[in-house]
Image (tube, rainbow, N blue to C red; front, side, top):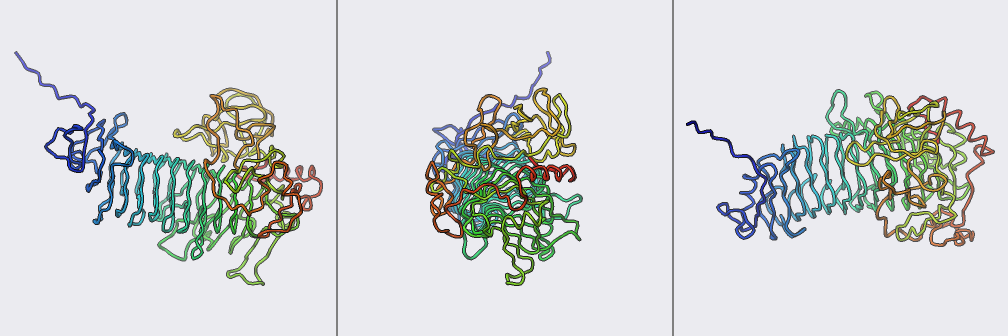
Length: 592
């Protein structure tokens, strides 16, 4: 008789660990393992439950999980399993070259780094964790990453470049809070097709977020591109010694929408530079083809800054085709849009935005030479810049947006706001047709969710549909069902009412049925400066119409119509814009 020996089938198990656990214990709740024992023993599908207490050993799995069976480290009680007060240089979580690992609910304070992963890691999930006080640069460091780093529901406080993700695609950073960091709270470098959404970021250390290309010279370059940054709150971010900003941005072909940028030195910083410090090159050589729409920029000394420190065209870099559309800008000073040296006004396209100021008031500041001297700085009104650069600045308006209560962070629009139903189309269809594939002038405004979040719901003309995929090269949207459309039909993201609103929030939420993803806008923008004079706080706007004296350079009494001095009759202006839109190359046509 022949005896057949079969290997023991791997089985997913749950084991318990404790700070005083033993390697010789069975790993039960009553007789837990040590964390070291769990690290060396855990296999695909296993769950390691960390009992309450402070551990002096890193979470450092020796093996990988698998696609259907990750290795999970989970605190039994949220934030009661701590990895804190370490004097050595070990990270709380070590994940270099690991994959399919989940870490959930731990707390780490006063360590060198919270997370350390410097090559080969992919399919890593960190959720519902609390991180505070780290000494090491890039306190949660993901360098040389593969795909699918997911960070959700975590708190990061007082790190140094607190969360840094470099390389890889399909990452998700969602529903996290970031408070104070030396330098920057969140950094993306060389990241593709990833989503950052519904986070709150405030940093009095310097910046809330940075987006760059990889510093190493790749062929082709490893840029940050085709990312979506949406529904976040950036700020406050004020540091009197260092220039602070909501985002210092040098990304490409990406979407920034429905965010709030508030109470910073600079709200949105379009950055482009190179050549001065070779150690940083080429991180900001490319800033092009981005779509910044339906955001609120509030209470910043410089609402939007276009900052070209050193042009890199001779190095193959580019700063071009960055479109700002349907945004609300409420600044503290007349520097609501800053063109900093050696940027020029045509570096940005600024269409159908609302600026909180009076007609005839300076809102643009152009510094065309290094150093702010009277010979080289220019203050421009909206009418002046629209007249001088009509190809890039058009159909913008100056009036109080009438937020519900900006002082407490409610940037919804009051009834009667001129921003309601006033958004321009994001793009238009190229020709009449029917079916599931729709050609559009500019597909860069839309996302299919990259398989990690819900795809966009859009209106093509008056028909509401869901996007299945976006072909950016062909400028084509594939929809979930067949429809018919006319040539030049406007294409919008989801809205309620007659049309979409200007700003980050719809005055009425979209339909909310099974077709629609959650389009609720940023979750929290509280503790705003009540003195901004944005027209909020009175349903009929009477306080804004009283004609009071300007505060911080902003006239509280303005509820003005769209600026007409740059182009005369509104219908003629729209016709001229439509002509310009058709004449421009397909990558830059963007009129709604």
